[in-house]
Image (cartoon, rainbow over all chains, first blue to last red; front, side):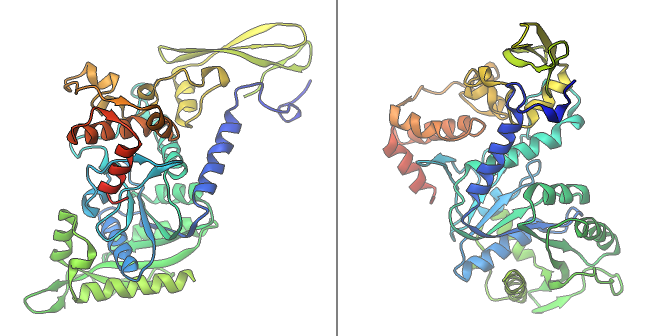
Length: 287
Length: 145
């Protein structure tokens, strides 16, 4: 009797072919992108999205062509921070055009089409059992986004990843070895511990870990024009991968994010200089 | 998944796929040698597992679903069938020219209802009751694309 591998094709269901076509569309759609960089952590609340947007702003200010894909479908924040809430997805001659920030960064975020009062819902035949299929559906959606939007010619496509060490690894698997990873932590033992798990998990795969950024590394006091301590932890051990820089917390940066105001309006502050430094380090590590 | 007719030792071929019924798909295979037919009846988890991959089973089902049914956001988009069953007010209908429809058709189903609804809203705000390629281009320019 024949076995599975003795039979060519699948009798007409076409599932494997469709999945292969999806992968081809993704590869073709990203052919013009020079660097793919996923900004992750494993830990939530460390400022992945803020750093992604403002690193993109710093890189854009250097004349690079940048796009952001907000891969946190369940908690999208890039639409608000980038000022593209309510932006349309408009079909071009072949693919869907991406909304852009005032300074020209292309942004895909579910927050453009789903109001903050709504959650992302999928139709399901298996009611109430979303743990059995939800992640698969979200990655299929990511594939559709990558394959259907017009990414065009870019120097960098940055993925703003959701929290969760296991999710970070799933994105690495899905995005493939072309994608480099930049991790974000804060100066706390708890955060460092979680991010260390992400480093350990990613190190087993084929994606390149370009390094990490220590965010909220003190806060910038505008009155004193000085960086003051934000966390009281003693010296935090390094993560065993390159540290691309430290970025202080700045309430002004939070205000820009809430208002969708571009990085260019931040002004010449230590925070901006720190972001510029990280952007430069990132570029050097990629080339 | 593949099916083998054991007496003939021949791979069976997909014949028909019935629309989902309470979460179950009915997929009929037949043996090209002896004509024997069998049906695979999926449970809701199996149906959802396939749907979650973003694929359909078999060519027969292609094109049968509407924009709205294929879209995970259908229920929250004004103007779509699901939303009309809810509390969302039905806006003034907007026509689409064939050329504009052709451009819309080039984008995947999941994003199509979102794009359609947003563009129709943009057209209405401009006082237009028809979406043509000029409206599409104006929308792209307006949003800085």
